[in-house]
Image (tube, rainbow, N blue to C red; front, side, top):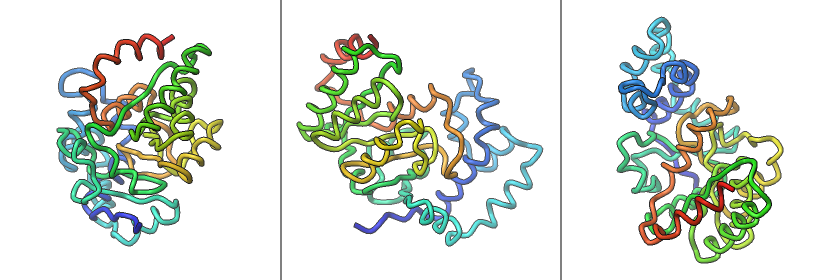
Length: 249
C-alpha cells in the first residue's frame, strides 16, 4: 500500500507543535484556558501569541517558508508517513474529537488505521511497576483481544503497556501511541519490541508533534494521548473495573 500523504497545512501545523512543544508544556497549567486540549484548539497565530510571543514573528516566518517537498523528505528519511484529517485513512472516531490532531505521524503499515473503529479497538495501559500477576494478565488480555480481531493500543512503556503489546503480537495487531517521534524507540530498552510492532503486525503513531527524534512528552500527557487515540468500546464496559483492578496491581 502506498503511504498516505498529509496536506501542506497539516504538515506545517505539526512542525509548529514540535517547535512550540517546550513552550506549551510550560504554560499548560491544567487551569481553565491553559489546558493542553484548549491550547491545541487555537489557530497557529493565536497559539504562537499565547505560547511564545517573543519569537512569534520568527516562527511564523519559518512556518510559511516550509515547503511540502522539504517536510515530506524529512518523513521519508525517517521511514515515516503522515496522515492528516483531510485524508481517507484518518480515523473517523478521532476526526470527531474537538482537539483532534491535524496529522498523525506513523511508522509501519498505514493500513493499521483501517482497524481504528469504535468496536474494533481497545486500549490497555497500566502501571510500570506492575506485579508479575498483573503482567501475566495484561499479556493474556492483549493476546485474547487481538486473537478476537481487535486492535490493541498501548504506549510501549515498561510494565503493563509492553506486556499488552507482546500478547497482541502473538495473535494479531497492535499499535503503539508514542510521546516522541515514531522513529524513536522509547524507552530504549524496548527497541526490539518497537521494531516488532513496526515490522510484523501494527505500527507506531504519534498524535501531537511532528518533529522526529525529539524528547518524549511527559508521561501523563502521553498516556492521555493513548486513551484519546483509541475508540471507546461500550460492550466492554462491564469488564473495565475488573481490568483496572488487575492492571493497577
